[in-house]
Figure 1: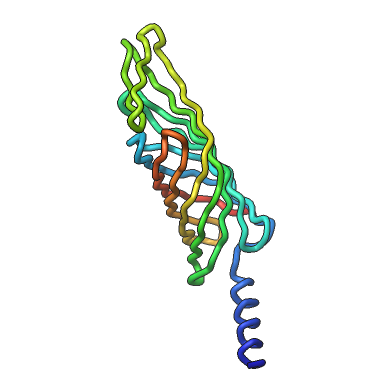
Figure 2 (figure 1 turned 30 degrees about the vertical axis):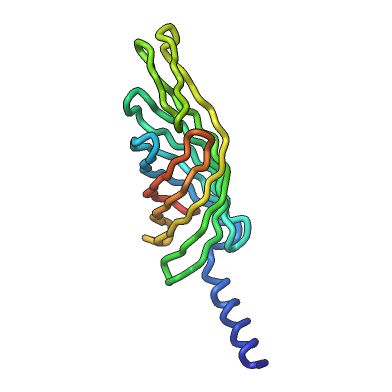
Length: 175
């Protein structure tokens, strides 16, 4: 039993050394697709490893106008990194989101949001809906070089009346 415990501790120490290093930072960009807005977005992100496996990632995404609707999305996510190969890490994520949905209405417009019918007068050309919600999801980091990583991420945003899945392909420069 002691040998098994010793081997398990050695394995955990080995795996712990392959995590991103505490204090490591990265800045990056990404291309996203939101399922509710049905639009492509561009984003910026900053990553900071609080501890070896725990990473903080604030990000900002802008989804381009589709059917007179665009969106600005601000996120604060936490990742827990699990190395699965020498250059691959998987992570679950949990975080907060603030989304600002911008409606360019032109001549007036009817919106059906989860069964609720909203009519906005033509006198009001622009309408914003701001919501706070929760992100849940996961992703994978792939090391390209010593300083560059690529990641694929899927998160689901639980936001009142505006729930959506967001697919993201991103790149980041580590320093």
